[in-house]
Length: 427
Image (cartoon, rainbow, N blue to C red; front, side, top):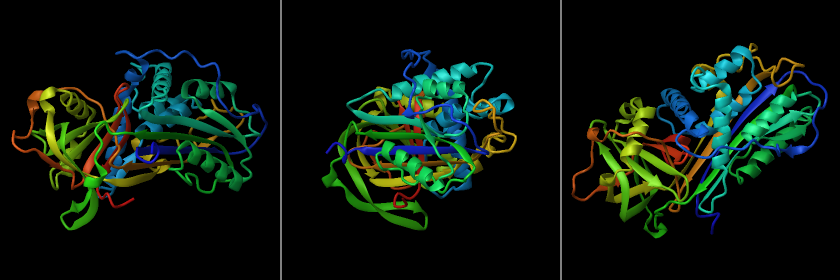
């Protein structure tokens, strides 16, 4: 069946703004801007490619912080969802708060204007949401607005034009009903995979911004389910778990063994505009590999894995698993330079000039399901002299110890999902 046999990848992020109350400016439910600006085509200087380096840089900064705080735990998140949500929110920020948010996302505003950033996300989201018979992807945002507060038309129009956001007016004094409404919307948009994103809302909440990514993808070279068997997975020196281990031994794959780093890298393509890099450190060498996980290294690996001499027949053993990640962004982002965002000094006067809005909380959830039919990954630049493939004899690659996952859109060079699988039996 189409729905049952594909990879499920998705994310939802939540930002809530609160303080005060007041008067309706817009009516309607879930409306979007019908007069979208024309979105430029793809090309080497397309708007989405111009923002890709900053998005990659932010993704890895976020990853390194999470990994340093929880070195022995699974990690999985969507940097695209977090970046898009923050960039969208910056449309309503002013003065130092706006600059801090965009620079925190990795943008050099002397090289890329604020307008360039938003046009880049507009182009990126437009391309990711293009219909495809091979890849099911849905990236979207929604603003839940207090029906009594006069939101500035410029903010609402720009969020719809650049981020294709849907607008919902609701009564935040009914905290139970509004919470249920938001959770039902996210559940629907993510095909039931993200549930209960929002806990109980505060009675002074005036606006909630939700961003979600839903992705289903088929492997270009699927595994055969009947060949999956239970095998050991070595979490660390003292912990071994049993996992369903998938097997391929007649296919060619893009892979390499790094000559100077203790790891192997496998590129797995999906049908459609997506691919994945799976980075497998040698036993006990995860920290060494994480230390060199930079945008430049991802580019080198990805570029190398498009060269024919790295396309070889491989006996591949890969786990079937499901993991998830939940993150309280209001505790994480201040450590990444967003010091004003969740403080009383934040300036969101571009959203409404009636009240001093604050963003007290922000949440992010993501889940990943990998099975015989599907999975995805990152971006690249070459340096072939630094790497050697495995010897020309029987090539075997066992993903039976912790590894990294980078899932990316090939046309936009944007990381969609990033993570680390430490224990595939931990949901």
